[in-house]
Image 1 (cartoon, helix red, strand yellow):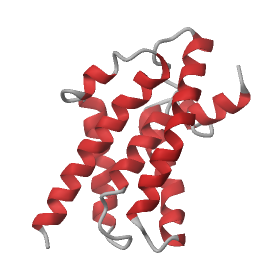
Image 2: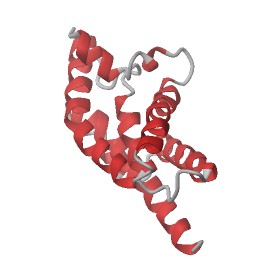
Image 3: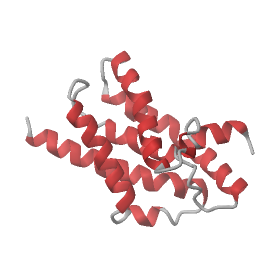
Length: 154
C-alpha cells in the first residue's frame, strides 16, 4: 500500500482512533481548518477551495485503501469526513462565532451518520468515489442548514 494513500485516507492516522474514527477525522479537519481560518481572516471560500482541491486526492486515497484492504468502505478511511466537514465549514458566517463552528461539526456528523436521501444512494457508487461522495452530500446538507440559520438570523 502506498504510504501517501494511507496518510491521506486516514487523515494523518486519525482513522486509527479506536472509538469513533469518523468523529476523529472530523476533529482532525477542524484542527487544520481553525488556523487556516485565522490565517485567511476567515474567508468561506478557503473551505470551498480546500474541498474542491482535496476531492480527487481523497477519492484516490480512499479507493487505494479500499483495494488494498479488500473492504468496500474501510473504517480507517476518514478523509471523506475531512472533505465533508470543510464543506460544512464553508457556510459558517464568521470566524469568531464558535457556536457556528460547533453547529457545523454537529450537523455534519448528524447527516453523515443518518445519511438522509439521497446521500445514502451515493454510497452505492463504486470505489473511492462512493466512499467520499456520501460525505460530500452530508457536508452540503450541513452547509444548507447553516446558511438557512444564518439567513434567518440577519
